[in-house]
Length: 371
Image (cartoon, rainbow, N blue to C red; front, side, top):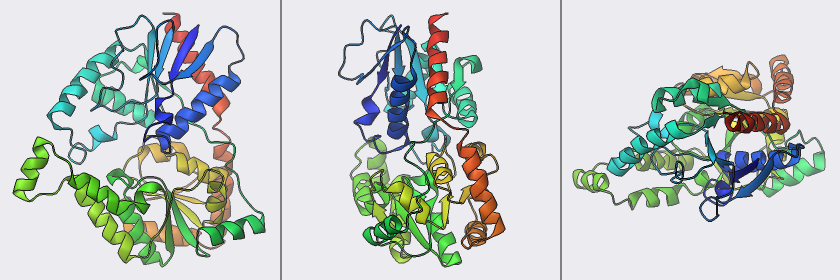
């Protein structure tokens, strides 16, 4: 059996986001743990490679408003599609598709019905796939992401001191890692940290380049953008980034930008609390990273985050800065509750491994070739 898995997300804008990080981990784990001689796995960029001669094509990214896999149905190979989340469909008023996007969405629904299997990252995402894309539940397999083995608690004082100086981090702070799009709900976290009187540190390129993002959205030139311009109405995402930019500047939020993977475990270990305030997530990889680094976690009352944390994090109302502030304050100093959460997170983290991810993915390959 010859399997081609799409390495495209490792080169695109996804490379430093959850999709790219998880695709890299999946490819490495498949190559490492595939001990059977009956499965050959090649990681290739589907946009620039000859895909003939493969028994299975595994597409590793999906956007309902773009043609993510135009070759599906035009080749003899079995097809497996990875769908991480359907955030654009859940917040359609905010992530507006336009006419072309809506046409592609309907075409994608048609193509997905021809796929042999769909892999997703949580039971929450599976429910959304069934609901929005009208997919047979039997075709959708949940395979959890795992975490890079480099994520672990850093206790060496010298290493932590050097990181604190390098990134100019305060003694006590709340940490957030990731993008700052609308569904991430960063405004609530900024307001919560102001109430709790504790610094917020954001790791990620988007927050550090928030003004650049507003310029990008200003330059959109589709028909609906022209109508909005005439009516003096901002694009919902442009409005979001403008408001968030003001909140970041006026509340002394520390945006450190991109951080190399080798420095992230130390920053997690330095943080007093890790917070994931999202309105919606497909998985929430930073929560798992925080667990491995033995950092107590506060999550929003969101299905996927609750699924991944499974009782190992405090849960706050995503619409209540005060609730988040209360949860943050309860963990910002040493306490029995904080120690309990650290232990619970460490225990929960052990339930996720790339070896299991690889095994379950190969089970999907074997299933589609047997039908």
